[in-house]
Image (cartoon, rainbow, N blue to C red; front, side, top):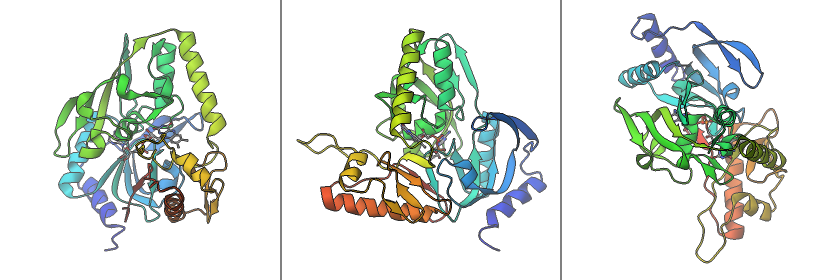
Length: 336
Ligand SMILES: Cc1cc2nc3c(=O)[nH]c(=O)nc-3n(C[C@H](O)[C@H](O)[C@H](O)COP(=O)(O)OP(=O)(O)OC[C@H]3O[C@@H](n4cnc5c(N)ncnc54)[C@H](O)[C@@H]3O)c2cc1C
């Protein structure tokens, strides 16, 4: 059997034999990019990952399922693990670079799990909830603490996995606890301390946990001040970042600070090496922000981006001695 069909056929067979029951009806969802309602099939086969990532790159996923509830997500993960089908959980696809060979097994995309309940200053948030929505709701209720995430194009689950941050803000100050699914199928509630949040890392990443629901505790604030901060953060982002080009945001992490030296940043190191605006095959270093690698041409491949990452690492290390670690996550067949 063609190895690329193996999991697709296995999953389809399980559905046919009713070993997995999932209501595959079409659901109406809001497409936030197109600002309109679209109809979504909850189980899809041979899915083009270009349509599901901000980088607009990558091959096909064997299967993609859109769970709607925690129960459904847990059942799907347990089912796939029992059947030996690989599972990849994704949020909004803004920090991943999918291999040209695609993704083996089942991708669980959590965009329908966008529950958001607000009780006074306590928010219960589903893992697929977009950060922009969180920030908008907080502003509408004069709650402080989420101004930083207004322009990060990710979901709650992806943001905790990566410990996303911007403009001196992060979830570390407002995340109280997180309900997770463990690799052996148990549901646990973890406190903020147990989440082990550090620069671009969390316990989700270290222990392969799946975020199911976050509890955030926010502070009451002044709506004008909050609105001003959101506008200021948006202005900084739109003037400095190539938001018009497909990318996964900052490609590299901030390097560790060397003793006796100022903190260095990947974008400044790349710029100093003369690579800002450098074009490599279909990819490029953004001429607007050297920390962003972008899809520069329609025929750009993930391989082009991977080769450009390696070239930058080599040149920067040669010139400055700093090794740049990718922040973007490589996902899929033969990723390393
Ligand atoms: C233009 C642009 C600007 C950006 N600016 C910033 C910024 O200012 N600060 C910043 O920190 N990042 C930034 N990013 C990167 C990215 O948006 C964040 O890392 C974001 O939090 C990723 O969320 P996501 O839902 O898109 O995750 P995805 O890309 O879908 O997934 C990322 C990882 O999280 C895992 N994951 C997703 N959901 C769950 C879940 N429920 N449980 C367990 N694991 C899960 C996935 O398996 C994957 O490994 C930017 C990206 C772009 C394109």
